[in-house]
Image 1 (cartoon, one colour):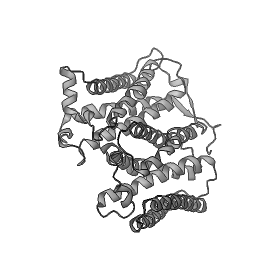
Image 2: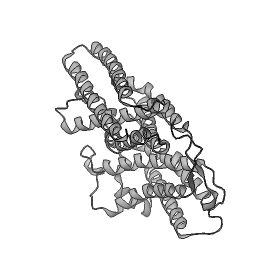
Image 3: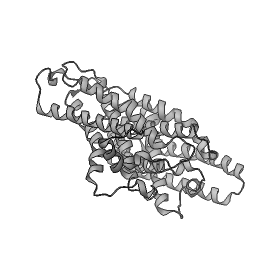
Image 4: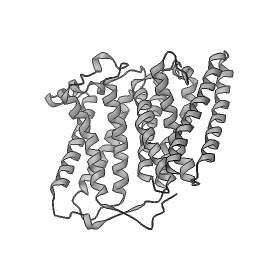
Length: 368
């Protein structure tokens, strides 16, 4: 079943492509704006129903998390895969040309553009692995948390930027805003409702016995926190010699490509300060303690999801053709890579350290 599940998931992508192609043709031939919007809503509902019906036919997993959490995350990344392909093909896009031609700067900002690429590639691969594991009756809780939290962080940033915008929004953007509740709240909560398939093992706790690997991990956590603070200070306009190095080698911090709107990149950095920085601090606090709360695992995965999202935007956005030339960097700029890889490496080290303190719980439910 496992390999056929992956094949059928790819066939689901093909079905989605065909349905979106039909919607795109409808958009192209319909001249009346109101008729177009009404038709898009109806066809979108039909598309969603058709996709879930198709998944129900080929899939043998009959759990609420598969259909209410895993599949929505998978279909969202599939949708973004189609947008990515169309973006490469523009101006001759074949799936969502009308959507991509919508004159809304929020849709075409470099931050949403790069995130769509992330969701359609990296997160799509993670979602396919999730389907593979769940088709084998194995837990995919931690893997599911990565795309769920990544989408939650991006959608929350997108919502903040659009709701505080001083420019007219395209009807598609307005129609999309209410779905923020699903992505920011319901899907992450759905993942967290899945029973853990591990327990925190005290036998690997370090106590006062300091070992080399944990010292390296804690040093990376501190370094990651320093980078986040430096980005925030540069954003706030603080000037000194060290911060000037960050400003010159990581110029995307100053990106403001949508007028009369809170800069997307600014919201991303403040997410770092409000979410990632405290998680780093909590992890450092418990690093050498014998008793470690189990929630440290969820915090570590959440931090990785946030930093994967943000740093992917910083790294890819710094080379993207849509980025203003004065904010791009040379691919051989070693300082740029050091600045932007440290937080991501720190979050991976955080996960690795937590995984050494977990053991499989035979009593945990494998399928949920």
